[in-house]
Image (tube, rainbow over all chains, first blue to last red; front, side):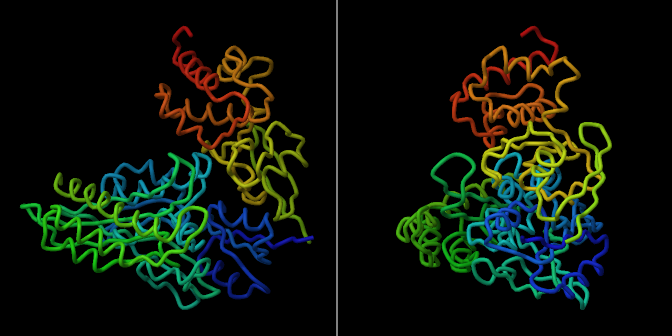
Length: 289
Length: 160
C-alpha cells in the first residue's frame, strides 16, 4: 500500500533539509487542493510530503517597505479578507479568489497554484502582470525571482529538489497604477480558465499609459508575458486603435492546444477579446486613482 | 509504516487519533472516529458533501490530510445541533424540505452555517456563490435557497 512520510517542519532550514535528504520523490504541501487529488488518483506518489504551513511567514499578509509579503500557503479566503491588499491589487486578489469553491478557497494558495504549473492557473497571470516576485528558499538561502520564471512546462517548475516557495512579494502600487484579471469559462463559477488575462497599467494625468505589463494564461505551455501587448498600450490612451493593436498582439502571442475546453482558434480569438476587456478595467481603475 | 499521532479538537472535544499520512481528514472522521455525517461524494473537492470547518474556515475534509489536523479546531455536522435542539439551519432545511435523498445535506448545512456566521443577511447571489461548491442532484436548489434565507432571518432574530 502507498504510504508516504509526512513532515511538518517549523523552520525553513528544517524544510530544506527534509526536501534535500528525501529518499525518492518529495512534494511540498501548501493547501493540497491539487496535490492531494493527484495523490488520491495515483498520478503522483511522493514518498515524502513536506507541509510548510507550520513555518512562520508561510501564512499571512504583511505590508512592508518593499511591498506586500504574502505567505506562500496563505489561503485565497484569507487573501480576500485583506482589505488593504484587495484595494491595492484588485486584479491579483480577484484572480486567486476565482479558484474553486468556498471550500477550496479555505485552502488553495498562490504557491500551490503556481507550482502545480498548470498553464491555466488563475492566480498566475494576475501575479505576473503585477510584477510579483517569488521568494524561494533552498540550501543556499533565499533567492527572489519573478513569478513568470517559476513554471517551465506543464507540471514542471524551475525549482530545485531542495527548494520551495516561502512567500511572494507584490510591489506597492503607487500613483495611477492598477491591475485587472479576467478569465473566460463557459459557466459562471467552479471551472478552469479557457483563457486568462492579467493587465497592469500606469497612467499619467491625461490618461496616457506610461507603463504596462500584460500576461496571458492557458494559451501556451506556461503563463506568457506579452511584451508586444504592453508596447501597444504604452504611450497611448485606450482608444479603438490602441485596443485593436492590443488585441492583435495578444492573439499573435498565443501558442495554445485544442482540448475539451476550447480549440486553438477559439482560445486565440478569446485571448484578444479578454486582453481588450481586462485592459479597459485596468485603465478605468488606474484613472480613478 | 509508522502512523502519525494527532491531537485536535473536534466539535469542541479534545480528540486524539492515529492515522496514516495518506488518509484524509474525511477518512479519519468516517472510518476511525465513527463520525459518518460527513460524506464522500467525489473525493476531489468538487461536491462539498464532506464540508467541515477548520479553525472556523470552511473546507473540504477530503482535501486535507489527517496529520494536518494537528492542533486544529474542527467542526463537523455532528457538532451543529446542541443535544436534541436543532440549529436554525437544520430546522429550516427540514421545514422547507430542502433535501430529498439527504446525501448532500450535512455538507450544505455546515456550509450554510459558515455562510451565515460571516454574512448574516446574504443576497440570493451571495448565497448561491458561497454554496456553489455544494452539489445537490435532487432539489434544484430553490428549496435550499429558501431554507438558507429563512435560517438567516431566524438567526438575525426576525420571525421567519
